Amino acid sequence: MESIESYDVVILGGGPAGAATALSLRSHAPDLSVALIEQSNYQTIRIGETLPPSVQPLLERIGVWQTFLAEDHLPAYGTCAAWGSDALHENEFFFQPAQRGWHLDRRRFDAMLAHEAANRGVVFYRDWKFLDSHLDGSKKFRLTIAGNGGQRKLIDAAFVVDATGRLAAFAAHQGVQKSFEDRLLAVFMFFQFDPADEFTETYTLVEACEQGWWYSALLPDGKLAVGFMSDSDIIKSRRLISFRVWLDLLETTRHTRKRVTNAQPVGAPVTYPASSRRLAQTAGNGWLAVGDAATTFDPLSSAGIMKGLRSGVLASYAIGDFFKGNTSGLEKYEALLKREFENYLATRADYYGREKRWANSVFWQRRHEQILVEPDQMNQSTVQFSHEAGNDVGTGACSG
Image (cartoon, rainbow, N blue to C red):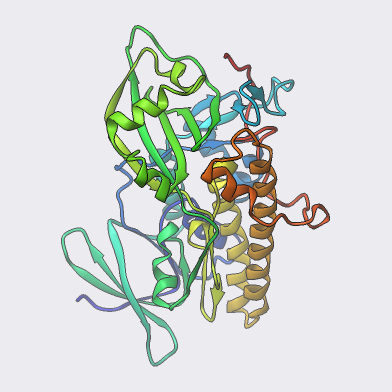
């Protein structure tokens, strides 16, 4: 063990939510010392996401809008969905040619945010993993982190931000339970196109089927990510992590299979958790959770990054109040996240309720049996799904 280092705020996780928290803290609470700890080097694959045009105010607020534009991510000109019927529908941006979103290179995007935080005075630990924590005699959290080479370091923090994603590692150490709404699982495969036959469809596609739904989107390296979403028990019983079974199911689709007609699969199917859940407690004495550590949304919302950025900004204000001796900011933060999640569940139930073609399907029965929130309880702050389903991004036409 090296000598113990100490910071006002330690953020565990260098994804969009953690980096946004750090950037926002540097902006309005510059006197606080902040450390950002990320267990990766941003080299391994991260499932991409399409950002909507509405991300601009958030990126401006944390001071990275121009840097983001300079990264030159792929444009995204729309979302199409076969949802509720076999026909494809465009989203609400179809008649607004000036609107565009972005297909992100997630590794590059996440790394940019973390490096911007480091450039503004945040101490950045890359390739260091959170191991455990406990309160010391001064009521600070003593954290143990481990580097890639096996070395360990102790860090004291007056305040800890859990930005460790779905794992919610720090909250788990505090004994906080997770409340799951479903057991949605994504099974992805990646497809490579022949260089002579470039893939030009820039929209994200969502297609419902009897056992779940399909998602496909262009990746920055010219590959296409294709994912099947269903409950984990359905995927297990139908052996949908099998290369051949997955491809056979893909062949039963009308729209998705056409996208890979001239492409070859790369590697085997890979699973990613996609359930909706929230922590029973998203803030406590001297800590809070942001992004997917706090709440996770169905990929149908395509709101993960937006939610992470927004929660990071909100968290920074609650943390600023905490260091001024006002803990009510933490209570307000938790109340905001609770309301956001409730609004999300209402919107999610509404959109799943629009698909009525498979009344005998276990997957759809589970979605239709969920209790709907009364319409007057929904407000404009809820995360927005697309006009029919999928992302709320861009413009463009669907080809069928």
